[in-house]
Image (cartoon, rainbow, N blue to C red; front, side, top):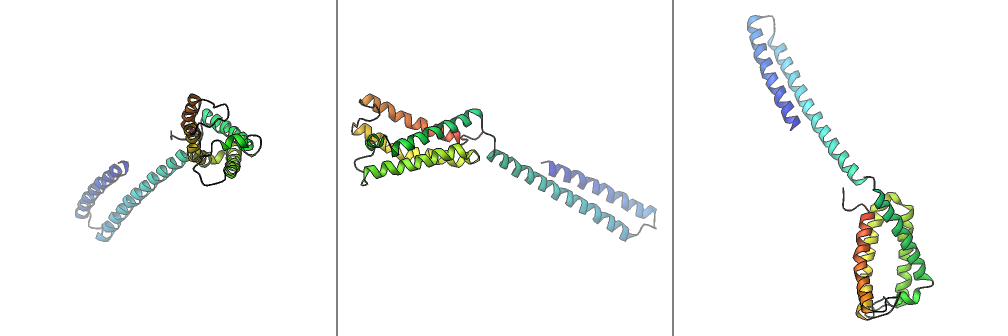
Length: 201
């Protein structure tokens, strides 16, 4: 809008100058037609360049705003969520690989045609990698947080299987406790997305 208004202003000014120059050619014969045409072209070129530069400035501002939106500084709560999830995932991954392997196997669905211990070991390695990334790569928080949310979504069927098959593990020895654990998974997904910077401010 500002560029259009500026161009209209200069166009109006050019028209006035043309009228005055025409009047001068009648009053002052020494002013040649070539000089008049040259001056007119110079003014038109200035208008064109001004409009082009204005358009470039608008594009620059737009690109800068987009870059700032993508690299916006995380809030304190987002940093706390990222660090907390990183520590939690690192601990959970180590427990998958060591002292809690048997209990985690209770969360592997019985219909999954894969060795349960391999599933637990694989998920443990993934959790350690995600936890370490969250803690050591703060500038990649959008990528690591999104990956963690996807991981939580992928393992959610394990929580459902534990409830449906009534498998006891980690103190979840009643239907109510196992049902309550199901509601914890969406909360973890939301926390992962929050640590990643979603929703965008």
